[in-house]
Amino acid sequence: MVCVNITTAKGETVKAEGEDGASLLETAQAAGMPLEGTCEGQMACSTCHVVVAPEWFDRLPPATEDEEDMLDLAAGVQRTSRLSCQILLDPGLDGLAISIPLDSHDMRGVG
Image (cartoon, rainbow, N blue to C red; front, side, top):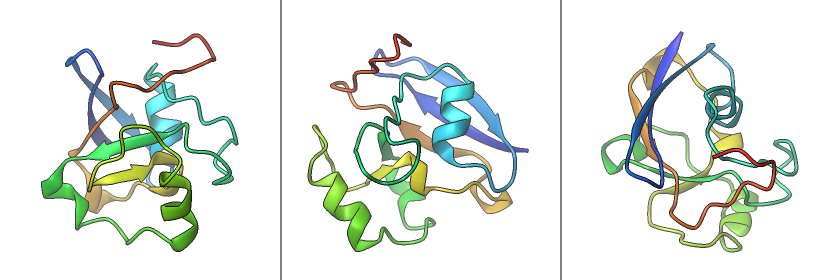
């Protein structure tokens, strides 16, 4: 299992665990986080936008051009923003720290 530390828009820290190979989106949703993921990980929206802690950002594979294009549509984008559907967990990411942007809205009614 890979542990992820998620800071909510309210400033609370939630620890989530995901299987090696699971997407960060799936892991965060399983922990009850308000990440909508409207396109179900097909990179056709930006509703799973998260901000990766700076000390973790360079440990991730670089974003593709398609992901960067989708991030251009997300509200509150920062230098270390990523789409959580594009981050696959592996043991090297154990302890990954992310935050959910303040302007994140989950139309599924979570959070």
